[in-house]
Length: 478
Image (tube, rainbow, N blue to C red; front, side):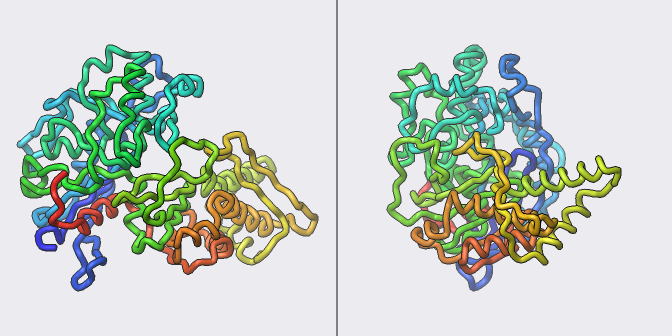
């Protein structure tokens, strides 16, 4: 591996920025060691610039995110940063920001380390942005892609700005995700490069031809000059134009990846692994068999979406909106009921007692469909409780049924049989809700009877560094 045996991974998330330094494990070609890592809250929420976008608009101040990034790097050991041979970058997908060619930042040589400060940049309109109503989205042209377009997606946001703030768009001549921006600034690129992972998250991108829907977009008056050029995720975008926290000038920087793909990559050791992450919501992802190609048109009712992964393969992903948040809703309900009865109790106490009760209640006839938040493919679905009997009303019964319901809902989206057909042989379980809930672990093992590995949490910064660590060092620059 030579000079690339130490790599830096950066993840520019919605609420926090993370950085991790990795080293190849001696004598193990696929192994790695995390030498150091750091996370900082971004605190980047900003007032929406466009009056017409309030209150649905969700924007972030790019300067604050970059400040959090610099705080992360300042906290990492300098001797390790001096040895970094490549930098991998991932970040929150779908979002869009704008800047002017050659004026996107200014490098400040003063202080402890050279840093770049954003200049002539817009705010970041994030994936959470809700300014594009369903009516507005219905007015947009049909994409030539297997992925549909939603509010918060880069291209739909640009369409909205074109209609509602055309003067705003005239101030800028390039656009990208925040991770594309950081790569472009580090390398001094005149125009950003974008991976198919991030391009697919913007909409109007055909993953099979690896191209934007230029004719469709041009016909609608879309400013196609803003769209970045496409390159392989993790291939070399360029080299650092300055020394940066003692990372040497001339260090390779990879084309930015999506945080979903980097997160999965951080713990999917084999192509035959699936990754299940249960935190607030739930994601179950598996690498599709080589040669798999998704359909040509979007299917908004499909429970599984197919996203570009690495080496022209795809991830099949079932993303449920109902995970740890459902358990939190139940706990909150119990605490509220008890308060109404004049009893004050901490939510953490209720949670530990209900999991303990469910662990002793190994089975139940009670059936809970826990979709209090609906699902993307079934937005109007609500929750329900059925097969209620007088002998199945204990806290243990209800909590066991609730945990089972969360997993059964996921299984209805992506089943054990389907995973087997895709060649999955093992599942990696991660996420805060899974790590602290033994009953949820039992239920996933019951619904998905594969060999399981728990305890390795997904980490996009580690994944971004790992891609650069394993990338063929002789691969040509993008």
